[in-house]
Amino acid sequence: MITKTLDAFFKDTLDIEAIEDVSLNGLQVDNDGSDIKKIAFAADACMETFQRAAAAGVGMLFVHHGLFWGKPLALTGSHRARIKFLLDKNIALYAVHLPLDKHPQYGNNAALARKLGVVNPEPFGAYHGHKIGWKGRLETPLSIEEVISRISFMGRDPLSVLRFGAKRVLHVAVVSGGAPEFVSEAAAEGIDLFITGDASHTWYHFALESRINVIAGGHYSTEVWGVRAVMELCAGKLDMDVEFIDVPTGL
Image 1 (cartoon, helix red, strand yellow):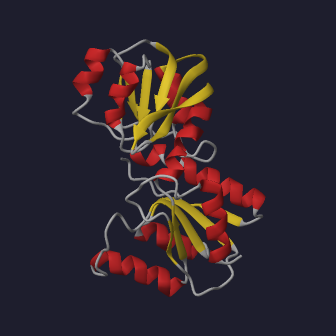
Image 2 (cartoon, rainbow, N blue to C red):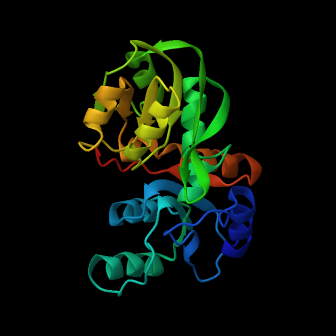
């Protein structure tokens, strides 16, 4: 399967042009036209991920955070080294950012909502005219510890837990990654628990005074779910050889 075919599949499946985004969503680095027999999936486009992808013998790397963000970058320093490595190893790079956060089936937030057992999830978290997260009622009330256990990736601890609301939560909202500001929207909608990736000093006192629980699960740990969902899709629907590359930052 060549990059042109995979690009068409990802564009059609993930609707990557449906939301304004600073990321250059889609094929960021092409290969030489060779057939791709294996795809690796990871959260971040970085040298460690690239090296492990090369060692795994992949032809394409699919990531959530790519190499290009809003403006052209000079091919110097680590940026040059990363692109040169991909070209030398003939590895194509594919990136999908916000469309993978908001996707109702394969997105980071949809996956987290499923792990929590949200019943009839609804879009949440307005950003550039689109709602990129999800909210809803749980099947049964959960303690904060039970929530953490369900959404933890590889059993890793969250960055921060603000236990400012109910001890058992029923209504939750999720926006993965760097989205602590959506706690205000969650509080306004009567949410018991807001889950995001990044911790934020700025919103601490607002959460305290609003009596809302907040879990900052970690930017990385809340954004592995989308690429893993797409990985499972490719393994099943495309019958591709796939591999997940785990490069945690602890943040």
